[in-house]
Amino acid sequence: MGIGPGEEFDVVLIGAGIMSATLGTLLKQLAPELSIAVFESRDRVASESSEAWNNAGTGHAALCELNYTPEKADGSVTIEKAIKINEQFQESLAFWTYLVEQGRLGAPEEFIRRVPHMSFVWGEKNAAFLRARYEAMSRNPLFRQMQFTQDARQIGEWAPLLMDGRSSGEMLAATKVDRGTDVNFGSLTRKLLDGFNGSVYLEHRVLKLERESDGRWCSTVMDERAGVSAQVRSRFVFIGSGGAALLLLQNAKLKAGAGYGGFPVSGQWLRCVNPQVIERHGAKVYGKASVGAPPMSVPHLDTRMIDGKRELLFGPFAGFSTKFLKSGSYLDLVKSVQADNLYPLIKVGIDNVPLTKYLIGEVMQSPEDRLKSLQTFMPTARMEDWKLEIAGQRVQIIKPNHEKGGVLEFGTEVIREPDGSIAALLGASPGASTAVSIMLGMIAKGINVLQGRKDVAEMLRAIVPSAGRKLVEETALLEEITARSNAALKLG
Image (tube, rainbow, N blue to C red; front, side, top):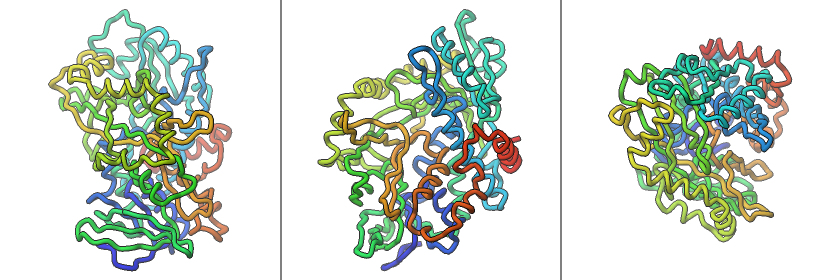
């Protein structure tokens, strides 16, 4: 399907990934009369960061990710970020539950499955940290099902591959939460857009965004197959094109985006090709990140269900590429450098030398180096059982800072115009798992196509009962929505 000249829509969504799919579905639930167009430069939806092979697939709920629970100088552990992320993921579960109950997502096992989440560390200092983390988290209603052990036999029952061939004198510690999930965000995105009731244009690249005198946005869209461009007018634009969002944000000349830059980080997986090894592991096991490593590089031995097939991955191994998308251009980073973000970029480079050294080390790794990293988790790992796969591309946020000149951020951030006519999503982790929360926040701040509707808040509460509420303080609501999600999504 090609775009015609002079097309007009209420909403234009740039990028056919989980973010645009989530926002488009929410908008259609709130205002079915809206005309919505999705423009995707690739020949299929969910082919970049949302693709199963390009992201961790962990339903990020802070159950196993140690970087969400930093250790203080006195040895105590703060869990505020973990609480926030868990509550955000509960909103995602509630939204998917609602859509499944409405018959809009088909079979839930095609995009979400129950997989235990584990944390695993070795060494006295790390074991003490994991115990402190467990003690802080297990008192909280969100994490009360967490188990802790330093018993090697128990760890071996939870995850046999961790213990095969391991020295008996090593100090170990692990936690486990049985109600973790594995999410195929590629499959979920396709399901959302299949039942979307909007227009999805593949191989259509948005080249330019301009604000017109009447307040509407004019998107110049190139039909890659036909080799012709057209101009599309809309009341609202969402730039959800992964790493490429930065370039379009700069093109739109939003004041709120002035000074922002991006630092691209690529990734690789080791993928197990031995079915016997794959069948012996049934959990997502996260360890501690190396010093200087970005959050997306936290090592994990990860059971996945991808397109109906059980897989086992280890990694990711970080790397550096000047591309902003896996399918992008090597000139992306150069094109993003502008007068207003040059100083923040330079300051971030100076202030993040350990990260630079870490990435250089990752790029220089040999197959033997990667196998050695895997063997810290799985001592009996053999080279012939694993092959290297290219993972996704992420662009970390570099933002201007009055005191430091520029800072490197590892989360996600929404940049928007105050009138609610355009918004862009920058950043990476935890990303897809919190897509619903991000879009709820965007709607709460105001989207112009919803202005004048007095029933939005009430409708959102019906769709996501936990929206805007603290589940950690409302245990009855937590139990209610958990039971409902378990039943609808077949996670019991």
